[in-house]
Amino acid sequence: NAGVTQTPKFQVLKTGQSMTLQCAQDMNHEYMSWYRQDPGMGLRLIHYSVGAGITDQGEVPNGYNVSRSTTEDFPLRLLSAAPSQTSVYFCASTLSEGNYGYTFGSGTRLTVV
Amino acid sequence: KQEVTQIPAALSVPEGENLVLNCSFTDSAIYNLQWFRQDPGKGLTSLLLIQSSQREQTSGRLNASLDKSSGRSTLYIAASQPGDSATYLCAVITANDYKLSFGAGTTVTVRA
Image (cartoon, rainbow over all chains, first blue to last red; front, side, top):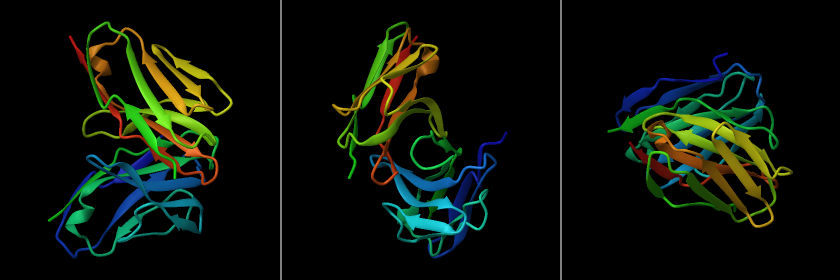
């Protein structure tokens, strides 16, 4: 059972480039979300999805897009990378909203130069 | 907006001492509270999940208590070991928006 798988683990982008961070889970979880972790700021919610075809914004959505075409996958797209998006990104999933614990991926460390 | 605070921010203890990590939250209407461990440069590992109807959960040397009405949770780690050195994060799911809100964490160092 792989849990939540994130790729790539590390990435360096130039300002203005675009890229997609991949997230996949094999636990049939309905709820998936993306967080970024920055020193002194803790983990902040970027976007989340309560099921295939349904997404919504979190606390810091600007500069990021998401879509959810399947239950398993929830990619995060950076449209035009900026140095302020240098961070560690975590994908998480849970069976449904509310009463269940979250499982986190191992993270993607992104540097924008 | 739910605010989660963890005190202390850092803790250094000799091996064998018991650890007490505190977490407080401002909105007591929660579904559950989850404690995570994060090693440097790694992801989050779930330690304990406490439902809002529960008072505590135990796993091995770890025990977490929850006082929902006062907005507090405490993680106890008995007989600490150097391998317990890590950052411990507290997170709550708030009932009105189902969002997972994190504290900033407590960084623990256990000295051999």
